[in-house]
Length: 253
Image 1: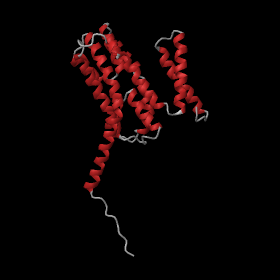
Image 2 (image 1 turned 180 degrees about the vertical axis):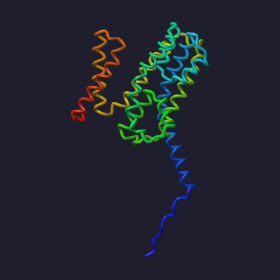
Image 3 (image 1 turned 135 degrees about the vertical axis):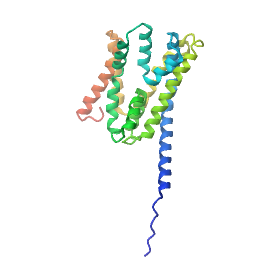
Image 4 (image 1 turned 90 degrees about the vertical axis):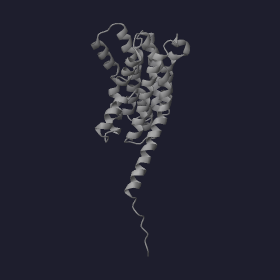
């Protein structure tokens, strides 16, 4: 009996296939970032307008967005700069506000453990709440496999990063065209974006119940006068409640 063997792929064919796979992963990452971009653009414009009103130029805003890349912290830093705060106060406040990134990085750590350090550094720097939401949701729903593909993750994060930087710089140029950002609904863009990201995670029962616990806790703490701390404490309460239930073996939480 004659056996027909399949010829091994040539080195060039293997390289071409690998390149095509990486291109598909990059394009998938860019597509996944589009909802984030749609949220970042109006928020970035709002930041640019506000920063220009406080005396920052396009170059200063662009450098801050490229090297800090932390939306909430940038809003805080600009206000502190305008108020004449000391450099150490601005730096320490930015550090405290961004401490949550330690938890996000720790959650994604097992899924990128095999990556080389040269890829981990930009991935860690570009990681934001919104990118984390997309990645964690993809892992939880098995849409993304572990370990995460570097091309997908870096394309996702780089697209969000560049859109944020560009929109903040553009916002400085629009300062004289936007007299009242609230009239344009700019103040609603950040809550709307987070609401959309939350909706992506509500497919699982634990996530839905965590959201309910956090919402109820928020209302309760606001009534007690906790102000902005209510949101942080409520999110912690929802996470702890679900974590305890899962720890007890209740997979439905």
